[in-house]
Length: 292
Image (cartoon, rainbow, N blue to C red):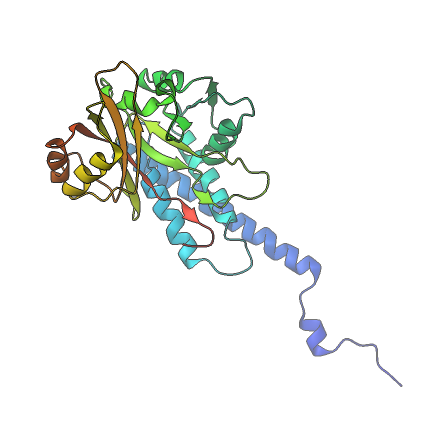
């Protein structure tokens, strides 16, 4: 006669109720860690920023790179940047006063969606029809950062917002990040690219690029500008020339590898060949696909 009693192996298998109890326990443990992390972040902000709003895109980039380098298992790697971006936004919001200004003629609101994705769903955000309005908000202290369209070759001088950073009075504004931080994009995600401007110098990460602005004689060619940068010890990754008809000067935007300081001797060497080179800022290089 056959027996219906469970075998020892079957009795040892966890039930659905057991697995759900494990998940409840892990959720509680995760919540405890999140609360502990928030407390430590509060202490870091108090000691390091002396009451100022902490915006450390370089450190945030390095945290994500480190976590992705150690990641294993079935949780999609692309989930980590999404989870931690919300965590960064939530702990920044603890300090209060962090407002994002988006400046772009953007009927489809793609730049707003890009900013929301990066800075979190609960971060206050104001949309403006022009980069100038968003920059003015940061200059006045009404917003912590401005999200602006990525500069493009051939755009009209009125759209080349980066040229204003060459002549910015105090507080000095800097390019501090590039969005989105994870590419390629999934279906339905905003497809635009943007730069983030803040009233603080960018903090370095393990893999950065610097953006230099320079004033030029209006007749200076791209070839001559590239030669001047190369002769100064810089290897341009990309360049944009902006010429405003009737203006006495043209403007150039040069992207180079690494994080350059204001006192980098290569700037002085470039100044001998092109007027007023200035570090406009730097950004952590976005993550590509499944690369860590």
